[in-house]
Length: 442
Image 1 (tube, rainbow, N blue to C red):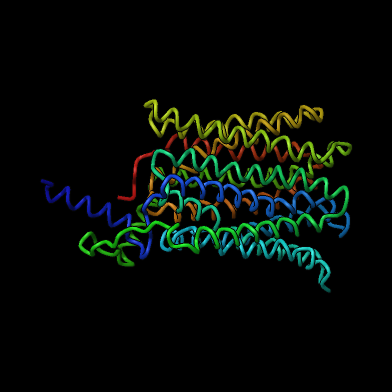
Image 2: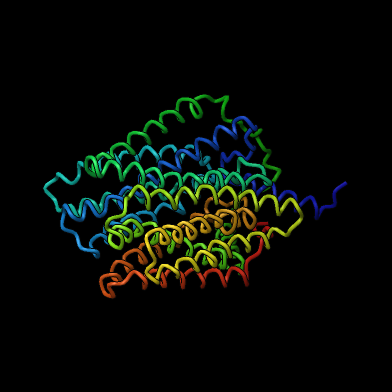
């Protein structure tokens, strides 16, 4: 027989799990979970193909349109302006109606933008304006993606499997950068930059159609939760909701997690945005199919290693918080050491190896701060991750633009690599000091 205090606590927990209208929190059956994991891996791959098409094509486009480094920075940072606006909304809506449907709608939107990007350059408007606008819209519609994934993972995946599933899905971003880097470089050499955007847009539209027809259209494929009686808990009022979020966001563990994510995301966005230009300018004879492929192939492998290692350590009895911090140390601390080595003007082969090590270790973030949001607040993981990613995107757009300005000012890439390392170290120190893995949304 439960005491009244225990009953009240259980009701609060249940209320937190179902407090959003229509939110389905029943985990997927194993077969359906495997299907969705593959589809989420694919759409994340396509998302990054669309996102990285501009950095890969930046040199060719700058030559065609006469852009300076600062203007390239303006175009690429336009993505992050849009990316900032939909993070929280995407996570909030996903927590309530299901991230699968939000993901489908957003994919249709950014796939359309990718397909139309070459057309926009033929309008009677400056390409600098049309491409910046296209990047803004791309960021606007892609902004909901990771909050949706976080919400889906919190609602549909079993607790012990989330780290590994997120690592598998996380491989999609590296596969996407690898694909658009390798295939895009070949297309650039044989044709021009326009087909890169068109092909990515078409494939993304095909993904959206497949998910709608075979996974979302059939009701039997979407497990439902039985209706809950209103006696299980009360709906949070606006005042209670505001106080809940204020209390949650003021927790030191949440603040350190958000700051670490902000630092990692901004430095990572800046790195992947400028790497193609760095290699093209520093090693003009180098093949794009090498420096645009090798680091991301390494990243795919290391992402799986990080996820497997994280799950193994937790199963072996290591504290979750210690595992999260160890993964984050690898992604922000060790990776920074390899970035600093790039400041010494290494050979092309060594530069590719150093970048591969830095990017590969950076993937351990998927088993660190990225999953930490599930530890701290699983009932509102999508919305909280939206807040985190908004902060990361806003700082990212500033850092991408500032890096372009810094390169023009100093005529040195070493200043950028040093800056990225410094940003990572600041975020890592705070997370190591204040990070936790206990649930705070009760």
